[in-house]
Length: 197
Image (cartoon, rainbow, N blue to C red):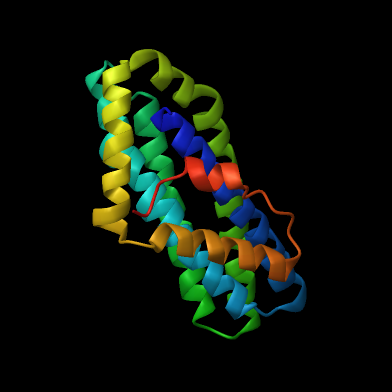
């Protein structure tokens, strides 16, 4: 298994949660109120799983490995990906702030931030899946890739905590079921993603 296989599998989970976010955003825009239960679950998965875990593995491990292999850290593909991670965090913060308010204007602000985040992350995932990860597969030696896989597992235990990964998968699945969003999380994704033991 390559580190990019793990990250691609995690993308499928994130895409399912983006589908959920799009539903909640559309409802907030039309009803002028935010589904706080679904919104909180989505924010937890996006903050913990997508940003802290997935983007953390990229920023702390994969991107530095690519830069050591020759990618320009200031202007190359990794710089663009890191910039988009920062933009995404801004949208998450705006959604979190809007959820603290019950007004119609807060619902509109939530929908705007949510729609911007969904658009950003969908494009971001496409860039990584179809461009950056192919470069990584070519640039990184088998030894470096194997070390990255082990380091990804360490992130799960030391940074995220035992059981966090499965809890995030369960929350993503239950939220999709509540919102009637088609499932993308399969057994293959569960076994290819980061581990909890």
